[in-house]
Image (cartoon, rainbow, N blue to C red; front, side):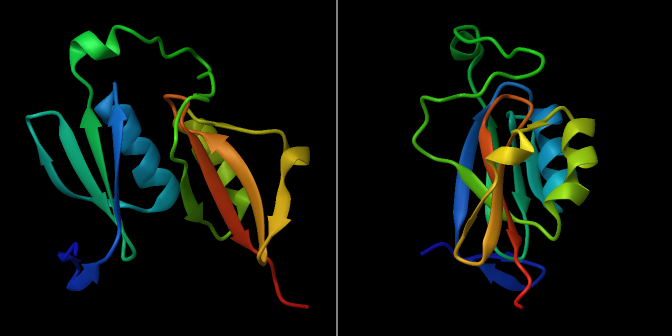
Amino acid sequence: MLDVLFDGVSIMAAAILYVTDLTIMRTFYERCFGMSAVDSGQDGFCVLASRDWELSLVCVPAASAATFAITDPPERREAVSVKLAFEVASIDGLQAVVTGVGGQFDPRDTAWEFRGCRLLDCLDPEGNAVQLREPLLAV
């Protein structure tokens, strides 16, 4: 069981994302989702946390990073088995932040509703799909 503390609260879930540009990716996840760095080292990693979970960003070895290209804007990475998802107050309100730090939004008409949320994907600066979950107001 993961038993890490963030502001005195136990974090019960974590994910690891392998990245090529630690600075850009750290900025994206901090600014878009309000995560805070709780550990970072000279060894090419940064651990970000919120009250709910932690995300470790780990630089891939240079030899591995050389085998794929990050385009501008980033192309969607399709051959992955995990997608990160974040609850956000407003998908529309997050657009300027996401694009301002190198991400991009899927077209608005691809949004869907599921389990009381409006869902729309965006891409982080390296092309990883990130699902945005905006709670729908109860009527």
